[in-house]
Image (cartoon, rainbow, N blue to C red):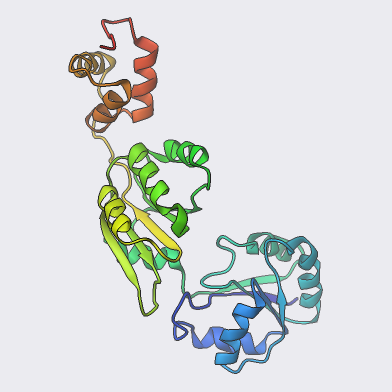
Length: 281
């Protein structure tokens, strides 16, 4: 049976491609490319004459059968516009179909924007969670961030420039003012990696309007050594509320030291207002 090669291509600098990747692109029967015009520039640069077929999100169902047919004739390479294919593009469905059809699937490693940003971020790399593009709508984005707010892993997201400020605002509001690294134009001439807190990032990109796609690497949630009992939480809530702070402010302030998540404290406070001596001022 033939092989589908998943060939990683440069995310900016055309020199960031391996000798094995170039040899494979020359030797395969067909290249399935996310954007044939974009891939053509890479192929022309290295004088590669292998024919290309477009395979992207909007034609994947139609072209999947065409790729499977091509595999009956010989090996095929799958490439994305930049980086490692099958991450944030329709390669996943193709890989599954190829495996089901009994063909081999072989990765040819190389550039990957999430990994490049992670290792340059200065944040922990031993355990991380890649979540792709943040949801476009703020309500959906907030629901996602609420679900992952307590995870201790370094978090990696992608974001478009016109949504960056609103995303940073939601991240800070729901996860706290964590450390973050934002990478853009990685490996290119005007590469930029901003490192600081979420609030500092908002100020920086207010002063310097964002351009290009961003990779965000965010500090994970803190692991709490101990979790307060309900009695301890009740006492701290009463003291905090007595200072005139709002329900959301109480939840944000106590989430760190208590070992309870912000959402847990908020729901607990709402459930117990008027009970246990817990009263909103």
